[in-house]
Image (cartoon, rainbow, N blue to C red):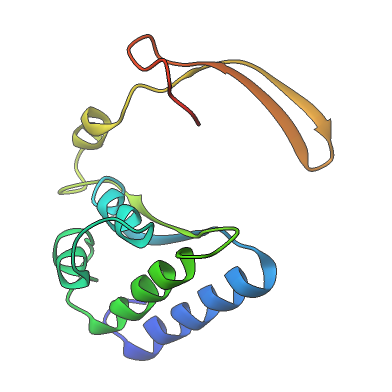
Length: 139
């Protein structure tokens, strides 16, 4: 789906359909995992301009494509008053794709999961303990 206007447009339309009609809450794209965090922050109402997000927060040569602006702007607008906001996530290794270490260095300490209980076919309860230096941490 690289370097093809129609593919990006199809992806945007499919995303809108899945979010609006079926309650999907994630837009995962072939972009750097760590680079995707500022894009998710922006679609969630964070500061910045869409041009900056496209230029700095997307890898795999997707940022220069103006067709990528539509999905990001739509997600940001959707999230303003959505009962179920949609997030934007990169799913590739960061940087040069040689090592995941730069991404791991940027990750906050994860809470320790103490138990996972299945309550029903589609429901689980996760009990966890926050990281010692982040007592207010939530999942």
